[in-house]
Image 1: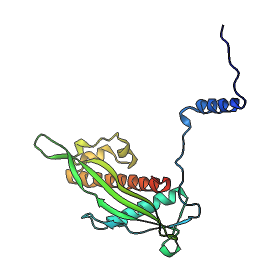
Image 2: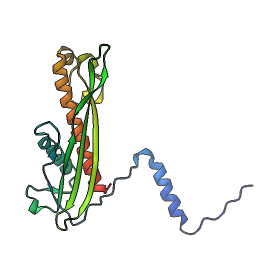
Image 3: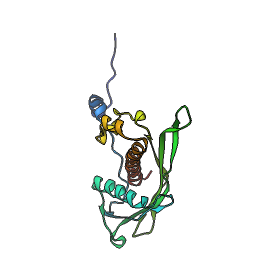
Image 4: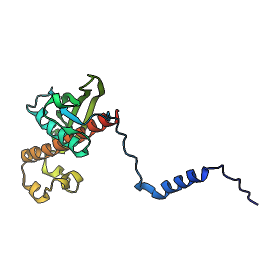
Length: 202
């Protein structure tokens, strides 16, 4: 005989809540908390210092960073730092590709592009550093020969490339095309990570 013990008063609502969450299954997700100051409504994105050998990289990254901030619709971008509640600045530390796979004769067939950024968020009214992120990194691989391109990969499909077209390209054309894709992916991911860090405080 199984005997049941009475639940403490008020425990039914707790059990019901837990059952509702379980019933929701994998569709239930927790969103990251917004730890930005409630009084902050505007942000100025300063041009990041470019410590790499690639001229103009800081301007390219700024576009990705602004797009990511605008996508969340939490802060309004301003072009004048005097009108901003917050200011985001930083340094592009590294953006160098390096061989990650070689063929039988030692020639690179796949490169890895590592984009590394340091960033700081400052409260313009108080001068206080609200968040600082170091070594925010994204690493993307890209092929340099047509035979190494995976035409079924999500990265390939997202950019609407055609496998027949890739097969007709020279190795140098493939490298340029795929390097551009890898750079776009790296910029997007680093910008997302910077925003997530400054919004959550981590």
